[in-house]
Image (cartoon, rainbow, N blue to C red; front, top):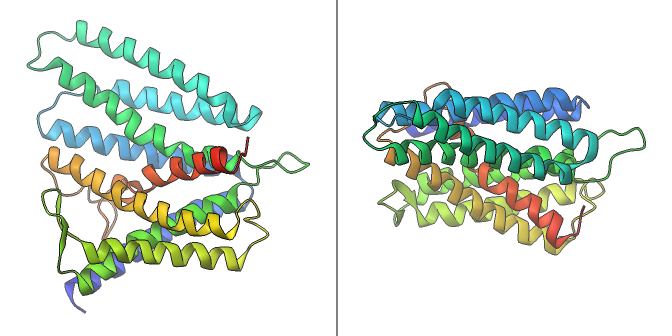
Length: 292
């Protein structure tokens, strides 16, 4: 096997294993376990982000950021589980306001720093970029009406989200590796190509149509035109999410967020595209489809 084939096999096995575990917890009806796994992934990704910045000499407030992220995710989950996603918005605003107050207070007692504004802004950006965006996966779970017993019913829409997003990632990699000739954004990631970009859109659209044909009753909130629109939109957002993390890593002068996952890198490398596709699907379902 060539190095590219080995990398692809490692990437595929890591992705399938981890996301298979995540989806298994929610399809088993154990939404607490699903939340715990998502929270672990979000906190690991945030820790990797802060560690990258610290390695580049930026003195971010890692412990404060991690505590606020845990509060944001935990409190939001409890409110969504009890009252639905609508109730989580106000709580998230409270956490963000308190977080800003704490960050400024910490800086006041931290002593002299070469660039305190940079440290504070990078710390706040991490909270917005990773745990807050990633929390929209949980919001999708509780966006659809619950069963008579009170169990959530949004797991199939999360399956749709993960499959379409990851098909986009794999399509970009495969088409880019096989046919890539024209660079897409060489100043951000020299390996990204236009062939990979269009391959990502094609595979995400195919995945969306395939899932809809496989279980139309489980995705009954969608019509076929929604499937086509989401296949393209989520595929595009997945590419932008991957490039967004490349911008972060380039700014921190590192290649991978960590080396924890074979063929992928770190947790942030695994979830980067979902940070953009999950809020996009949530707001499409809420604003376009009119789901509460």
